[in-house]
Image (cartoon, rainbow, N blue to C red):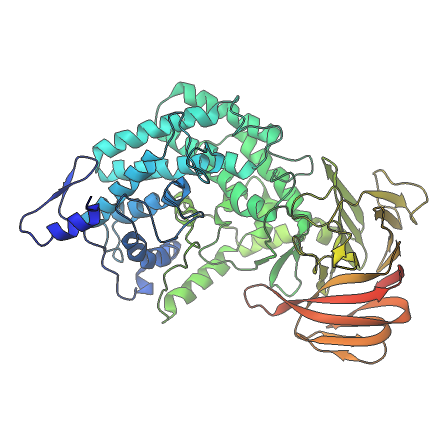
Length: 621
């Protein structure tokens, strides 16, 4: 059988020919879209600059489509196979460029683009099961994520088709598919979508956001009632007692901050349910302990060791388009503290002005880095906080507002610990280890020097650990902990005001670690049943001075070994001293991980082998 594209291109050689698409609408033959010349940056309104790289990508992406309407070419989501409904989410992208006239958009009203959109929708809808769900990893899968996110993309695509008054038969098919999908998704007895607690809260939230959009434009009392009940249900099952959103049995910063919270914001734009504000407030409280503000204004480093799925390591001070967190501004009036983690509107305006003035060509997006959510979230406008509002929120961060507290948050056998003392802020993740998370002490922050230690998840070479031969860190496992008012082994702390000295004892069958935290000092005592290595994940800046106590200077970005009883990291006026009491052969070595857009900060590991007993003092001066 000759393919659709071969037939269309062959027909293009004949006079007065036409093609009838699946919708029943006749179009002239559909050639590939013509790639564009370099884009004029200055022609884009500031708030629509996010569309520029997608415009540059549109023709290559459409021209990779196969004869069935499948987005071949691997532009979005894996597996890049024809039964994966998530690959088809770019129907929204095609619809937006077709339906929106702009001076810089030559594809508005383009019949060839509309033909491609119609074919893509035909393939997309052909994947839907009779119960309303869509597949992702197997053709027979009734998937949460493809159905949840698909609800949003299809509902917004339908709105664009209606506004443009095109493809009426396809509109009816999409509307029917959405009603069936919403019925499946909102059913409280559907355990693929609803668990207690939720397995992947971001995916459930996506379907509620899509349903909220659709039901804003469609009158359906039964589905609207189901959505109201679903908002209450996700508030009860999607938020941890610790404040984060449930992801794979624990917390994940990327999915919580960059996916879940924006999806709740999208839902709130169309159905302002108070449960959504409560969820945003709870998560912002958790966030305020886990994003570590750098005093030089670079942005925030992430306490990423507890993350279960992905490895978001930092957030820049200014995040220009495209920014996956941008829609979080929605909640900043009700939750002012959230402004601390948004780009200030004045800074964003400056970044956009610089983008417009640049003479560089706008490159197409890299394959897989083409999320259509960047565009859909741009439909809701923007109201970023001012610099003044943001500064006020930053000043209200708990570790900047107070110099002395202990905050312990718990959920399902996991402890999330935050200890503030004058001169330091220390984090830990104890109890059950879930998925890619790493347990133990996770970060050390100083009010002038910023983040000095920050462990990674899913990386046994970059967690703060006692490491046994074969690179087996204790952090790659469960580490239950007990807390004390003073030295470990004394009176237990079970809550209340922070004691003058705070103790932690944690471990497993192979090692016990005692930690004592006092103003400006941490003492960490390790008792292992075999020789091991103390591994400390440092965050090093190019201007830092790194010196072993024997006088050996370590080089930034390199590897240096010395026999010494300590190591100093000097940053500006602050020196962080590491002392272990007796001369041991120690190494500080750079890894490949860098931080922030400029990549200046770099991971270095300080490793000190020992015979099983190790006593470390960290002193901030």
